[in-house]
Length: 370
Image (tube, rainbow, N blue to C red; front, side, top):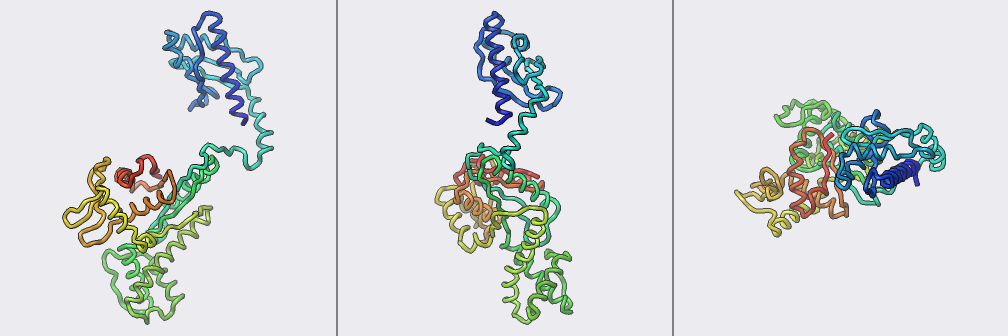
């Protein structure tokens, strides 16, 4: 038994015996219920506190403070780690421990070494933690870097507590944003070779894209001699991977690594969006309207239904994200945790609705805003 649990067990025993003595003396009726100890939020309130007296109020038919005082009056602290006990608030009993009790922890720390503090609380429950997931269209921003530190620490704590927590970075390496990135890099490469180009509105204007184009030409000096169609098809793979590698390198510098980098493109190439839409239609969780296909998220608390397939036949980001979450569940994870930035706060409701459309409990997905 760990030292803290041993000390708490001794405190519960001392309190139970105090109730027994109060019953024997006629101060209480008894018996003592299960005794719960909590750590007070404020250090001034002691090391542990219990609401035992408030729990006993109904059976005793007395004010909780009267019951608490009776317990304290009959509490014997000799031979225990309890230094003092006092009645507080509506009937709490605050307990302070003798300072020497912490010395008992030192041999346990020495014996267990690096494993001290580990537990099996999670019982190997499988959790998939997704975080950072920065778009591979430029460098990470500060909020994403912060999420990296937060997520990495959370994953280690969950594994330390006995969960089987795996980490994942979702790479948005497909869709219209990647087509635009490819065209921007191609134009910047032409510019670096002396051509006069104009970057259209909606393309990526940053210096980082120029550096990407420069790296491209250093690696492939004859790149611009290829036909445009071939160049763009190549860049739709190469350019996002260039930025993804940059993300990976930056994260590694401060100790953040992932079990898996999951590609959005892999879902599209496997036909996952089409399969999911058909499955939802068959279950009645999706329907056709105005030439588009919608997910029935309002049935699960969302403020409006969400488009899966636009009228031009293109899958929405939401549709592919639904595929990704379905894939997570299909891999056997019972709990999903996503860490998002403040700008995603409004997406929580629709995501909760989405997992229920997928046939999963809403609380199986936990979204943390960092």
